Length: 262
Image (cartoon, rainbow, N blue to C red; front, side):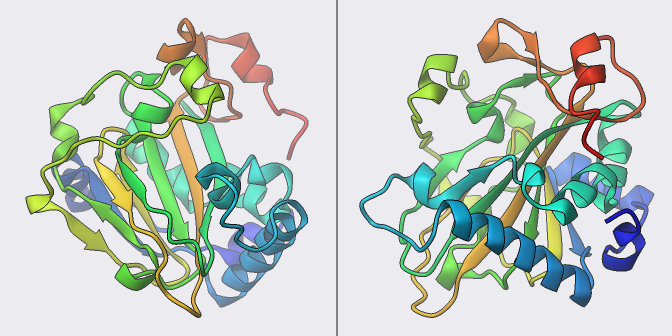
């Protein structure tokens, strides 16, 4: 996978207007970040990992069991390359600053038959990080729209800050889900084409409905980036462990984290 970066990914620097739009609206659609070959290989490797661990949708399982597969960069070489060296790292550096680490990589799938909704929340509700400038990226592996459970957001909602304290460590271990009460009058759906990506602020209010399509999956690669010195508020402000991708960190444990993974 050493040379896959330029073979599979589209790299583009953000314009001043795009950075301003992100600051004001709290999100930015990036267009196509995977070319056709990259999309095909990303799907293949992600589905191999998903099938080995999850299989088809099972209505008797929880939303976490049906919808999430964490640390996918440990299981799929193309995801690791994308997560560590892909175009979204450049975006994170431009929006957060020069010192960047990976904070999360996971698959968030809603396969056909999975009609479970994912309620309104901020990603900092699930993993509250300080400083409050971490960002989420979603890369679509399928075309997504309202029929198969696309993303919904409330533009500019990040401007109100943390809506309420995030989950505690005990809540996270118990797999508690968040469902905030939100005025949906300003909410908009964000359909995406396969191979496209969106990035949004850690305080962005967002949700997704269930997949009501009978013949279409909704497969998303979720990756989160943070300041290299970001700490976990819910975990006695311990440093969030994630591979250092750009710049430097004051935490030796972050500097050493996943250095054996290339």
